[in-house]
Length: 224
Image 1 (cartoon, rainbow, N blue to C red):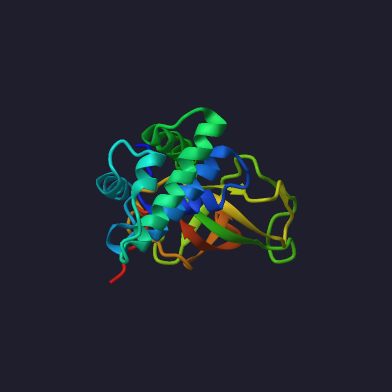
Image 2 (image 1 turned 135 degrees about the vertical axis):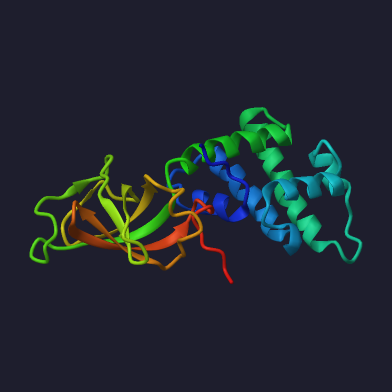
């Protein structure tokens, strides 16, 4: 089943690892800025935030409706968030001739949903040197899928690596990578940021990794 973005943290991670500059990234960044300015209790869920925006500024959301709201001594965070949304709509109107807020959001969410289904978490990988028992040849960033083994379980799962800001990695090198695992349901509610793992070819360990960001929040272990 395809993953669907619903939270601030998931969208933020996907935008953060997007190394291309384009209008949809600009729109998503402004949207995240607005979410970050919103009240804490409604800040994490994207669709709860949109509901709040429309209730406060009016539906449909427009630059004029946002600009009509004036400072009353207490609504600083609402106006800050509204300013980012107004800028988002204005830029989209100028660049794409699109001023419908819902369609703008749908477009950048659909774009990042495609990436969401290609990555479960971001990890820092340390490849072993050949002398340490690692590979003898470099790895290219095209569909390389060694097995991943976490300390807490005997199960191995394929973990596709897509390197960030690198095309080729040599034995002994360190790299950040997007990881997509074959068995996400098996590891549901099991992973934490900072967790270490090994990656292997068969049962031969060729490197170690550490989870930096969990993108697929179904995998994240609930905090106690």
